[in-house]
Amino acid sequence: MKKLATLTILPALGLLLSSGDVSAGATMNAAACHLVNGVDVSRATNAIMNLSSNSMTVHCAIPVDHQLGGTVTFRVRMFDNNDTNGANTICIGYAHDQDGNGLGETPIIESGTGTFTGSVAKTATITVSPQSASHIYGVSCLIPGGGSSGLQTVRVY
Image (cartoon, rainbow, N blue to C red; front, side, top):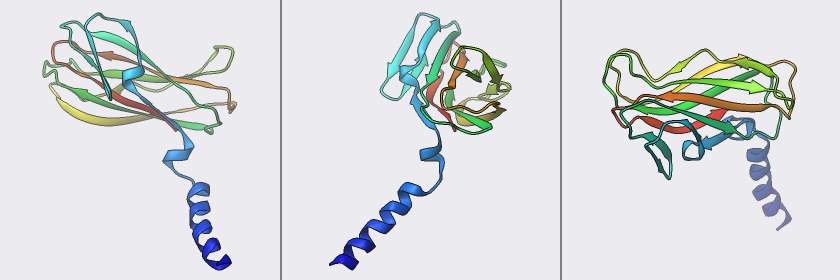
């Protein structure tokens, strides 16, 4: 009986101790993002979508309660349904220290180029120094109007 319990517990502990995407960062559902600029927005259970003909700006704070390391990756899952040339969803990931001082920004994270339409997950990285468990992470996005484009999830790891 003791051997059976040990064989059952060891694999479970191995899963808990293994490194990976799930335990190393934080993911936020974009439906919880804050609308900064815009008026006609739809909040689904798994997304925020721009229903307006005008672009809108959203901010997504990503709560993290642990140190991520020196290189931080931001991943944005977005959908772009506007086929107008150049009307693509664009985002920037950023990090601040606990006092609000900027520690870095990613290059622009863009859904596509030209007349791209579709769903994509795009990433960008920044180097954060010094490292701390009290840093504040977030993503700000400009979502084009006229095509029901939006965000699904934002992640930092």
